[in-house]
Length: 344
Image (cartoon, rainbow, N blue to C red; front, top):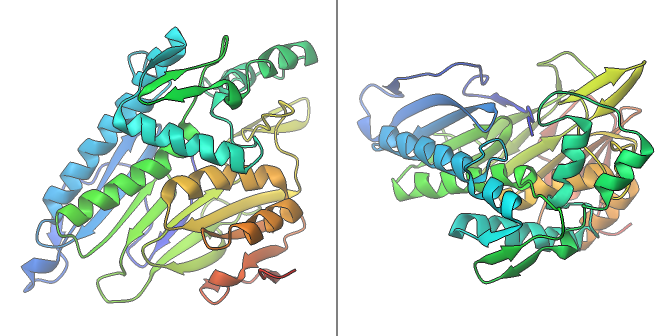
């Protein structure tokens, strides 16, 4: 998904590829900064690392992203995921096994709202190809019959799908990828770093000046670049989902890309933006969509049960923001804000 928080403090992420690295401080080569950009996974990505091995770390991170893209993309016919979809079964690599195992756990925890077998529905609506289509009820029912992750069986490194099922790991893969980038940064001795995978932001430690990273959350009701809030974080992933990201209009109606695997229709929960903040990038990625589908009341209840795993920011259609207590002191916003506590 193309999620678009805006990065502050070290500049706004822009399109294109920055090829060079430079010294953040002229006399401190141990704190060399390297910033580069890459187009992969259908989005522009930005990598920033500080340390004497910053350039090598960013190079390694970019190679890893490209490797994972080749492995996981449904748009690559030779990818591992595409091959499993074609055959209905297959052998899982270490990466795909880790992602799919986590996805199945979140599927169970969200009562089926996060479902990797949603791909036939996404295809029916035309979101993967941008050949948009409002399906008839009969088409929806035919596609929905294929959407049920409980039919996915994982046995060691083997997986089998249900009849005519196809999986799409796009709702969780970028969270895994950003976590892998952080692992690579640590391996290269990076002291401070950030990656934005099309808006899926994850940070390592603080900024070089010791201050938290400042992550801007896009205003879903404003122009591109306007802000809903600015959040201070360190060692966290910040991942946002909103209907404004990808949608199409037909006959005066707007259809967003966040589809409910139970109904087959786009989400209509009263929420317009959901940001999830967690040390676990995969969890943040998957929950940003699942909580959007739940709506404010159910999402708040889910958070209270799992408050030790993540924090969140919700915005409703009337512009009210709900912020969980764990980050209530780390956010700046002009919106009306209600703080959610673990006790109702």
